Length: 345
Image (tube, rainbow, N blue to C red):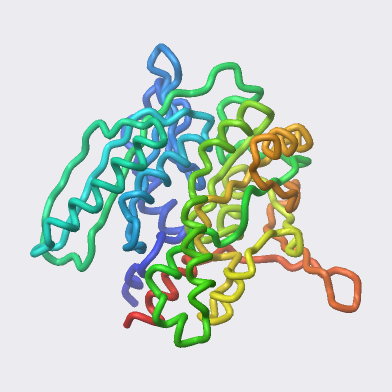
């Protein structure tokens, strides 16, 4: 039997390990944090301040793609304890694209980078056949914050006994994308204009740079921004990278009512929906980090803990009282890609 073809979305951990992470070129001493499962940023020591780099594409979102492209890679650098400095921007456009598409993408990227204090330092722009919508990829370069309590800050640094904190809400970016790209379907299923506007406004909360840098200064040991696969995916990646397990208390995970409404209408799981704007933080200094984040106006919730047993568990409270602990499997892909396949084919 031949190999099964790849599906839309992030490739599976098995394929990532087998076909990508097994081919990483030369082993250089300057690479402090190399490519690894669950790691979204690399750290280089080039003889001065450590340099943090991360790259990410925008493929599923259409509205505001230039803005998202800058923010998501800056998020990864900040989650590694680095201040974003410069962004390389690659734009691939379908053949026949109107110039207005490029003008819009660059305008969004420029305004976002300017507001974040980040320079656009280069990249590549090309028009090609055989793509149906713009593809944008960014690589962000940042400098490490000095004198952090824990260093390096990686997804793989979580340790048993650490609190697992989460900022903001689950499904944040996914809700904003659904409001922009699935508005007609949602209207047909009873979603109001007010709910659509409320969901679109969540897009203003997608940057985690301020809270990631504050958490780094006050005791974050491991951080992972919540992207494809949602809260469940990010928790799995952090635990798998760290060689630990994680227990999550379902009732403590904050979810906006509009996110629940959208997910019910489209039959999606909000805990497995792309959630850029939320940040997972593993720390032995949970109280200090919580206080610091609340001090800068960031919503933060204690949702679980890192444990020694290598398992991903969700604790669910039963209606009649008591609790049940369920072992979860990691998402095979994000719920947004399921929505794309279900409602656009």
